[in-house]
Image 1 (cartoon, rainbow, N blue to C red):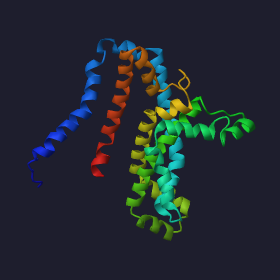
Image 2: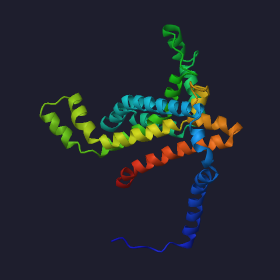
Image 3: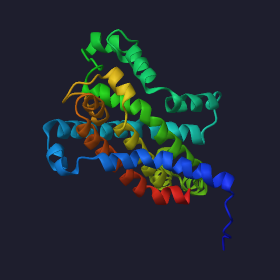
Image 4: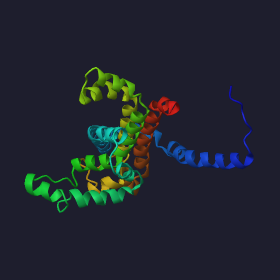
Length: 261
């Protein structure tokens, strides 16, 4: 049975101030929200378009991250090669990189004069910047580290005896990965995918730098909030509440995952 300890005043006071500091801005959104006109504002075409684009782009970006990030996490967790720590550090760079810098980097690679973008444009006529595909690319760039870290942690914590047993029974590496490894780490993959999706949904800096802010094409919810803040504060509050609601739902869904971790 856990014993309850008295909290020193020197810790309690700054802890309370820290809690107020985090909660008060969220409470301000709820207090200042235009509840009487909320249904009408949610039904506005601009809001629905931005929300639908955000949901679509975040979902596609998450699929891209799953396809690329799960194998990358497996390589980092189960193989030993020179420079693995350096590769892991590179994977986590987008976590600390300012999103605007990430957008500039994406322009230098996938822009029409970029390292890869020039070839895509000349060979296939594909232009990524300032398109919906550019939104997906920007969101995947900033969100993939969340998935890779979650899946790598799950792989390192999984019991490898099941994989070894499958190998002794004649299962190949691919069969072992798809039929044994993935089911073992499925909760970690699911948690990483949800975090990845949430990060993609809230992405702003890289998106506006690489894809622009064009309504109906690249204007996601965070960009719509930024635009509304300059002209209509109530509209910005409504859009912010939508994103806040999504964040709370995601945290509630992952609560058991965090507690067991």
